[in-house]
Image (cartoon, rainbow, N blue to C red):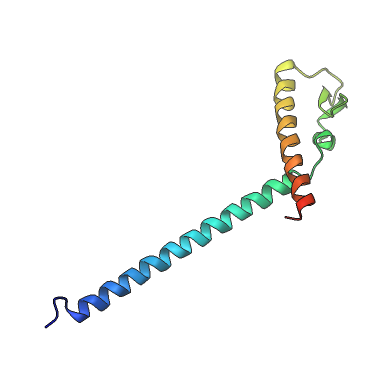
Amino acid sequence: RSLVDPDELKQHKHQQALRDEAKKQAKLESKRKQDEKRRERLEKGRTRPEDLFRSDQSYSQFDAQGIPTHDREGKEIHKKVRRKLQKLHEQQIKLHNEFLESENTGN
């Protein structure tokens, strides 16, 4: 005589298999999202930092790094706004370096 009912054991194994499959699917979905995020990040990094703001018609003059110095009307950009643009430029440098690295490694 068995200590565990065979039907109960089958039910338990079936539930475990369902849990395992759900974990596997969640892991695959997480990996897919992570890969998509990486692709988006690399795509953003395709733009060279010095070209980041040049296509934006809001600015008319740029410094040597490509950071806007004057708005469309030719007025000098406020220091606070310029700091924000500098920060975006620095982030773009990092993204672009990641992009170049991935191009060199073939990933």
